[in-house]
Length: 409
Image (cartoon, rainbow, N blue to C red; front, side, top):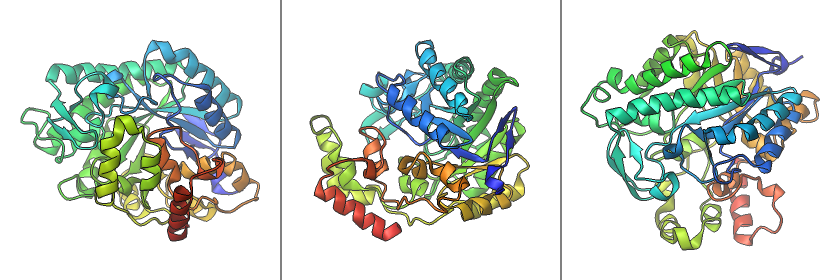
């Protein structure tokens, strides 16, 4: 049997195999609550053979929501989440939920007030003014992370993934690009890690020995003035010391280097096509004018994070979970042979929820996803979906898909 389909241990839980559906944003919630669409998608992924499926980005409170189609953790949504985790478990998979706070990556009409972050400034993607968090608010947020973990346990999740990368709030404190504070939460890397340290201590306390705790953390920010690989390794070593059960190694910064995370080209025609014209006319105009400058293309290749991830594997003892460009059986086995306990993937499971079973049964060796990134372009406005599941696409979107598939497929 392939090493892909051997069990693995992450903290107190055992997965039936080494595959994890990564926390790629589904945009399948309504009024920040779970829906049947979210239920159907994740149960289909579980039925398709995944070891563990991760419900994407649930904010720890209302202020941490960046899109209306996201969850934020509160007692009201626990029954709906429990229905989902029960169904996932019935299919033999484990259930994880990603918890985080978007910080400055939101707007007042989404989060309910002026967005907050490590430091004051302007979010050019909304655009909106951002206010620096007060120390009292930081302490309250730490408690919110702990309470979110308790709610996740109550909802039947086996694992929580804390988002500490990609330029969201914990990452905003870590990165010198977004942290200009002069108090004990800013300045040196040791100080910039303080918020993360407090959050993780609260998270580990809330989790106890009942559920697994993994952290998604950057290996580098991907631009001048951001965290370097050496600094990110120090962050990872601190997380190891804090007793987390595994790290998910990623890179990139949503507000500065978004395609470093995803690779390939952002399908700008798709992105603007699904936007609400009345509400976002200014953003659509800006993307058409300077979109390629704002969101530059980064070449796609399989296992595009593997080389820097191997440096982290060499310097850490903690279990590491690989993510980035996992579309073929051969590369999955290569990653596991390099010492990673498991790997995450998303786009192959957007293309086909039965992907893992088909690999296991020998029906295919590689996903047929050709990285047009159509699913990414539309997920900021409507539900995540692959183009081959959509009827009657406009010709301009078909041409964009064909162009990107020829480039990366």
